[in-house]
Every structure is written in structure tokens, then in C-alpha cells.
Figure 1: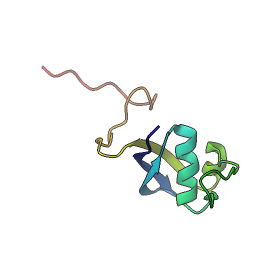
Figure 2: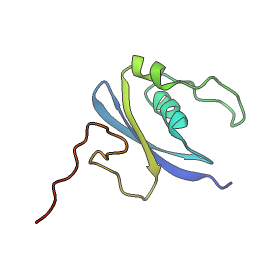
Figure 3: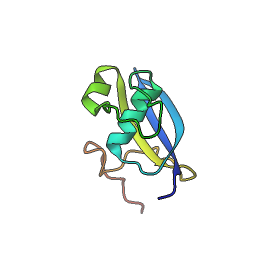
Length: 96
């Protein structure tokens, strides 16, 4: 696998924050961990292969980290909530 650039966006005590990271793979659990590291909560490994305990979503939320989202760098940010990620989002009105 080739490392790729990812943008991680999150909120820390309600204030928006974001950063770019280069990794071989990304998923929601990894994004929550790295958002925690950026916020100063998680531990950043000193060596690429060093095994550390990842910060979980519930633990990150205890420290005020919320709304973690990630995407490949260069792809547009989704500013409006989508129905598949926000069950409270209402459908868009039909255009006449």
C-alpha cells in the first residue's frame, strides 16, 4: 500500500480544528485516535511500528472531542450533514 494524505476535521470543546496526516490506511477508529493526538490527548508513537493503545471514541468524547470526520486530501469537504451520517437531517425540499 502507498501512504496517502488524509484530512481529519473535528471539534474540540465546540471549536473547529483540522489537520492533514499521511497514512497507509484510514478508518473511523484511526481518525478518532489521531484527532485525539492532535488535541493533545492521545500518544503519538515515536517509531512507525511502535504499538500503542489507541484512544477510542468514548474516551475522546470525555475530553471534548466531537464530530470527527475524515476524507482524502484534495476531495471536497462535506459541509452539510448527510442522511447516512446524521439521522436527524431532514431531506432536501424538492425543486419545482
